[in-house]
Image (cartoon, rainbow, N blue to C red; front, top):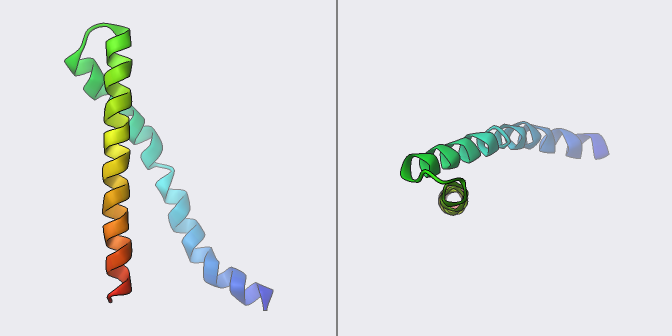
Length: 73
């Protein structure tokens, strides 16, 4: 019983592991975006933080839409 439950969850573990590739990508994109708009380190980090929150929020909204749409299928 436990083995079959584990085998059902295992494909999800593979897709969850792939989401970790997005983390460094979002951080780097936020830093580059902040650096193209400002010259001073404090302003770059502030802009990077704001864009990091924006991109993460946008990805969360898209995930929620796809997740909800999956129930209608």
